[in-house]
Amino acid sequence: MNGAAAPESGGFLKLTVEYDGGGFVGWQVQPNGRSVQAVLEGAIERLCGAPIPITGAGRTDSGVHARGQVVSLAARALPMKAWTAGLNALLPPDLACVSACEAPDGFDARRWARGKRYIYSILQTTVRSPLRRGRVWEIRRPLDLAAMQAAAPAMLGRHDFSALRASNCAARTTVREIRRLSVEATGARIDIAVEATAFLKHMVRNLVGTLVEVGHGRRPADSLPALLLGRDRKRAGATAPPHGLVLDEVFYLPGNADPRAAPEEPDDEL
Image 1 (cartoon, helix red, strand yellow):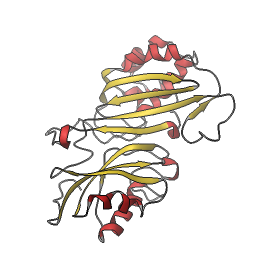
Image 2: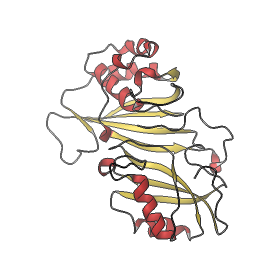
Image 3: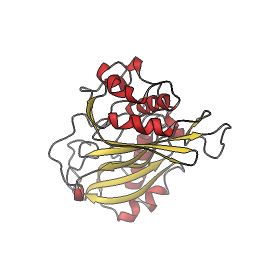
């Protein structure tokens, strides 16, 4: 959709979608399975009577969920209700459009984003939890929450996050800025919320895996600054499983205004 002109009969739209990533190979269309993008584009084609390309704010990986994925498109004029109730009638149970609104001309969900927040959930439990499986990373041994909280601030700010990116990450630059990072517990559940300008591939999941090592006493809480400076992925923790991760919210300027300058690397993949 990048650079596409809106049809004369319609305009640009901003959709917010929610999905269970367990049944998808990820956001982006791929030859090896069912993607969120392909399923959503198929439903939009049925709704509008013609194929319409869409752009997602974040290219979530296989198994990663979303409650605040944002989608932009240029489409024919339809009542706004058609983009929620009408579209949802055509979508499968694991994917829904939760809101729709008009957007400025040229709106691009990915390039206009000013940041994103992801939440990773961990459940400390000695036995499996059938009702929460697929939504949390179940960890059998207790975690030292205070140690994880003490380690987290070292990740705040602008850093080279080479140590936390996937080996096949193709980003042009590895510098990112984490604006907020919290580690909070509610009973046996720990939620790690990360808000940044943009992310490297697997960056959040590798960060979580590293914090879990801190929580298990396998890594000192004060070791993360040296880890970042070393820029060596092999020195960081294991990649946390995808099913504990949720794209929670994508941030834009008020009124979804054109930011005029894109982030350094807006195409995150988690």
